[in-house]
Figure (cartoon, rainbow, N blue to C red):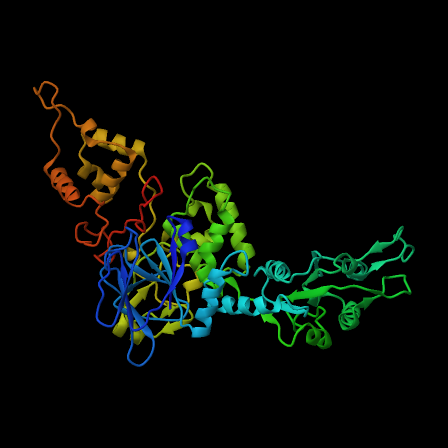
Length: 541
C-alpha cells in the first residue's frame, strides 16, 4: 500500500490522506499514464511532473520505485534516487512537495486503518497500520469494565488514549490522572487512598483519595513502575475486591473505579521499583503497546496540522523544512513534536512561512544535500539496507547533507566515504528586492548580468523579480539621442524571455532541459520548483 499523505503547501491536505493499493504497479504524477498491469495515481500538485515516478512489483518479491526524469526528483528517506531502487516497509517518499509512505500491509491492517478513518478512536485519525490495530483493540476494550495496561515510550500519548478509552466506556464518573513518578514516594498512598484526620502530623482534616474521587469513573495511573512496591500490593488488593482502607482508618470502603495504568518500562534496568507480576497479570494478560512516532510517520503531517490548528494566521511550512520533520527520529515522540511545532510557529511570527530558521538545528540539518551515486556506498532505505553491489545494479540513493556540506550524524554510518565537496549544494538566501534593484541599476537592467553576478540561474532571478514585482525595463538607461527611449533588452535576455514565455507555468514543469544545471551539479540534479536551493521570496511554491 502507498499512504498518500499530502503536501507542505497545504496542511489541510493531510486530512484527506488515503491508502492507495499498489498491486502489480503504480504510476504517479499530475497526469500519469496507465501502463499495462499498472494503476495510475494522479496528484493535483504543480511541483510534481506529469509522469513523476513509477512503482513496480518484482517477479520474486518486493517492490521497486523509479523516478521518471521528473523535474523535482524523487527522494526516499531524504535521499535522491536514480534508477530502480528497492522499497522497504515504512520508506518515506518525497515527490515535489508531496509526501508518501510505502507499507506492506495485511487485509486486517487495511481494514483497521479504514475503520479509524471513518470513526477515529483518538483525536487524530491514523494511517499507521500498527496504531490502527491498537485502536481497533482498544475500541473493543473501552465499553468493558476490565483494567488496561498501556505500554509505550515517553511522549507517545498514553494519557490521550486513556481519555479516549474513558470517553467510549460509558462510565458517568470523571477520569482522574496521577503520575506516580511525579509524587514523593511517601505521598503516593495518601493521594490514592486518602487519609483520616490525625493520620499524620499534617492531617488536619479528613481527605478523600483519588480512588474515592474517581468513583464510577476511571483512574489513570501513569508510570506505574515508579509506584512503591508496598503501595502496588494495596492497589492489587483493591483491584481484586474493589475495597480499600484510607490511611488512619480501620473501616474498609468500596469504590467503582476502572483502572488504566501505563508505563514506559516493565523490567528492572536502573534499580528503580518495578511492577509486581501479580499486578501485571491483574491489569491484563498482555500490555497494549503504543508504537513510537518514528514507526508511524504516516501520522506526522496530521499531527502537525492538529497542533497548528488555531495557532497560525494561515502560515504554512516551507517544503524542505516540513520534510525535515519526517527525517527526524523523534526520540521523545509526540510530546517533542508538539514542542517543536509550537516553538516554530512562535518564532515564525512576522515571516510568511515556517522555515529552517524556526526549527532546531538538529532537525534542519537533516535536509539540503546532493545526489550521490557510486559503488562504494551502502544505501539505507527505511529499516533496511541495500548493499553496494545492488546500488550499482538497481540504482543509487544519495544522502542529503546538512548546511555547509557536513553530513548529519544520523546518516554518518550509511556512507563511509563522504561525497566530493564540488557536489554539495548549499542553501543560499533568496536575493532581496533591494539587492536586485541595486544590481539591475548597476547593469542597466541586464538580467543575465545580474544572474551571473549572483551566480544564479537566469530563470531563478527572473522568477524572483516577477514575484517582487520588479521590471527590468525600469533600469534600462535611455539610448543616446533617443529622446527618452529606453535601451532594448540584451539579446541574451530576449532569448531567455522568449523561452520563459513559451512555458508560462514557470519553467518548473516536466521538461527539465529548459533550465541548465547550476555549476557544480554536473547535470545530475534538475532545477526544482519548491525543492530548489533558492525558495521563492514569498514562501510559496
